Image (cartoon, rainbow, N blue to C red; front, side):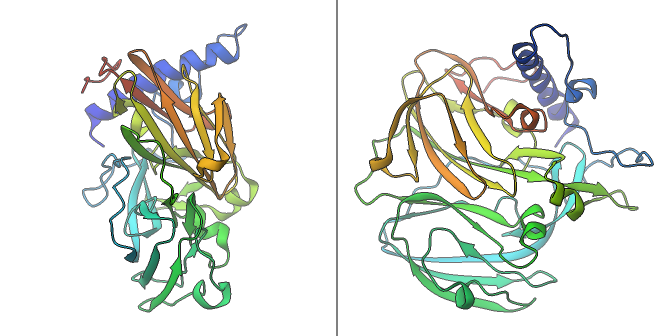
Amino acid sequence: MSDMKSVATAAVVVAILLFLTVMASPRASVTPAAAQAGGAVSAPVSAPAAKSVPAATPSAPHHVMSPALAPASSEKTKKITIEIKDARIEIAPGVVADMWTYDGQVPGTALHVRQGDTVEFTLVNHGNTSHSIDFHAAQTPWNINYRSINAGETLQFTWVASYPGVFMYHCGTAPVLQHLASGMYGAIVVDPAEGMPKADHEYVLVQSEFYVNKDDKGLFQTDYVKATKGDPDYVVFNGFANQYASEPLAANPGERIRLYVMNAGPTTTSAFHVIGAIFDKVYPGNNPKNAISGEQTYNIPPGGGATFDLIIPEKGLYPFVTHSFASTGKGALGLINVGNVPVPGAASH
């Protein structure tokens, strides 16, 4: 991420976090740690104090991950290949971490199929250790199709998307916590056979956690011991802290915005909330039969997902967060820009 964009993002995050802090603590003037550090989410500090964090290398720049959901193809049989790759990825400004990934990104590619589709799936392991895949959307023998494969191996199996949902897929190789904390997860959206009300915008948001420590080369590595304690250094949407603060999701007043939200965890709950808005509908499991109307906040457990529809009548900026505010200050914050209004500290789109 460029220095200019980092500063712009920091300014937006500081403004929102200060506002949220005032809301949460009306009697105290408390400045969040992120704001004290200049607005960006700070790198975790171990004892003895770590040296300054290196900037992202040319091989590991951060590019904002597009949250837009690609349409599902019309074919009833979907041929999907996922490649396991070791990758060096920036997870917060200046925090470059070695990750295990699907398709070289965290989260992995957002997949989109329809209820009743047949998925012909191939997993290719280009990594340096054993990995696997577990589709929460599938009904298939765990001991056969979710088995680990070694580096250089390929696994193929076929399954049917029988139920609609915003499902997780992830590595199930032991210890699963280590593989999840290292970035091996993604979302697959299964549309219901009967369809959904037409949406003007469809976005996918994967909430997840990072537990890291800096090594002697200045790079960050997953800290398994930290992960077992469930106190993450970062909680983010789509793999990078606060990335949608300066690059908001876009919509116009009166349009139907559909958010497919999956919580990859591995441990904390997402109390998903959009500040200044009310969910017209929440669809647990992306199923129209499960619709809830007029909801303010909806909990998504680790490994769970739900669909959120909003129709926002007025122009403005609407932050989306997890209402577990300890996590909001660790990077789980973004914006929906309704009506293309100016974003404080960043150029409007």
